[in-house]
Amino acid sequence: MSQQPPNSQRPTDAKPGKLIIISGPSGVGKTTVLKSLFQTCELPLEASVSATTRPRRTGETEGVSYYYLSPEQFEEHRKNGDFLECCEVFGYGHWYGTLEAPVTTGLQAGKWVILEVDVEGAAKVLKHHPDAITIFIHPGSLEELEQRLRGRGTESEEVLQKRLAVAKRELDASSSYQHIVTNQSVEQTVNDICRLLQQAEKN
Ligand code: 5GP
Image 1 (cartoon, protein in one colour):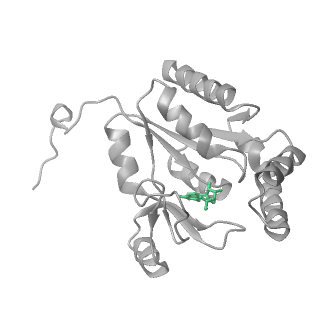
Image 2 (cartoon, helix red, strand yellow):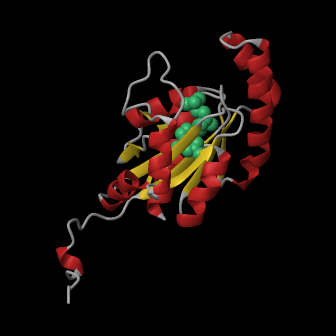
């Protein structure tokens, strides 16, 4: 009969990390906020790299921004049960998923693993990790988000209207998050998130 090693002989004695779920609508500035958070917040933060079937955008890097998979490869992982959560993200027409193994490894090593997922993915993760910290980055109002998206000038009117419809659905779900941080300025938002994480460290 195989024996489990006693606790003291586990590969790591590190204090287990924490799981942090961050959501927010497209155009709210999540990527910029998270980049700055990783650079400035003095906690052992680690970004979870999602898998997706959407094509790589200019400026994105394989294995850093996402793992870019074909629909067949994605389905294979899904069948194998490799995903902590995955969904065809509403309004995007592509599959996105969080691979479970790197998240588990990170948490066991004491990392604070950050998942940037949509509201549906967040609900799925919470079923397995009810103790996760949930943060919603809010634009303030749908009108402010519209102004930002228009200011960016990168979307056609049709795409913009679709983004806003998706955003409305996401904003409606924001009240189920433990923390809602309104992104007035990147610096303030990063400070707010870092402070609330430091507070969670004490609990
Ligand atoms: P984008 O294609 O603009 O990078 O992301 C589109 C949407 O997919 C965003 O709302 C983002 O939060 C969400 N997303 C990114 N990775 C994942 C993931 O692994 N799982 C889920 N459920 N959503 C994700």
